[in-house]
Length: 275
Length: 150
Image: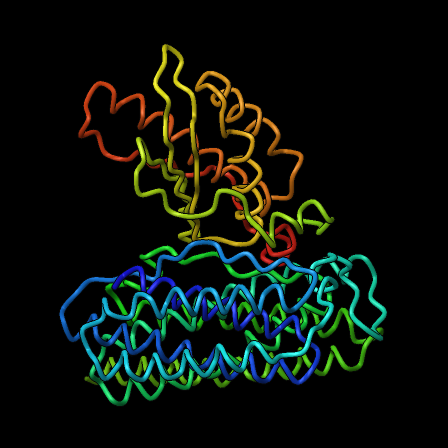
């Protein structure tokens, strides 16, 4: 079942990042399917926890560099077929029935997605359509997007692990909001990376990142990291404000969203300290 | 760090990234300032001068650390230990040419490789010898932050 778990995780990332490559309505469909695969991941994870089995988020590298969308779509279909063939390793028939039904539908729907040229997602141009940036601004933005896309993936998995392993309704509400927020940021940054030709799937997580002992310290560190991210957004907004009103507004928006994340983490911290 | 095409390639597809379950030695490089760390895993082909048959790394760190890990492990793959020791020395000798942030990341990877080589050597004498960790010496505080503090 651990292999099944890892392969669902890899299929989720492959589907999500293929969504970033698409510039048509296929993007939304791929986003929906990646949501379904993420949900499957949480079902298997809950089964591990219910059966007191240990598990990790270790995965293999997910290669996505292709020239045509169909190459990735075929790859995803193969991944889903491999998942189907391993469903019996999960002994909960309700889970496997639902998964099989989803997988069958997704494979049929994926086959119907129209072809698209997607080579520009990997050409390392660092150009953003209709935006003039200096070489220095392009480098700063490139580094920011690699750092933050990894960070958002990390946060999704960290909060997901915390939520899966906690029965505390108050904390779980906060963890779920933070997961949703990180998904939104990951998608915003992933789309930008695709536009700039620098799309890549984040590296796998070291186990100690999500299996931490001290939630209080994790939240304190998280608040500091959010403050750091805010500063980066402010710097980028200032750097691109002359050349792109759109980018400056985007980074100001992200900067302000970080305030909400900090408030949520402070709320969780206060709750833990008052318990 | 600038983001030229060569470095972007390492960011998009880091080489040799991931845990190696069946390893002969693991080494760790740590930055005590911020808790960042790099683990290097070695699979060794034992000879008089052992050779790095396979190598991988994992990191809790920034993109610069991942790029440094990707480059250094690519250079280390397939070489003998004596040459790998030279690679560590050469890398550590070039830190002055980098910004403090980049130098700290590079040092962490180079020390992780040194720790893995040293762990392997110790394990030949005592198979239970634990993984060695080395701490970096470079202060990775950005220069602009230091001038603000002053």
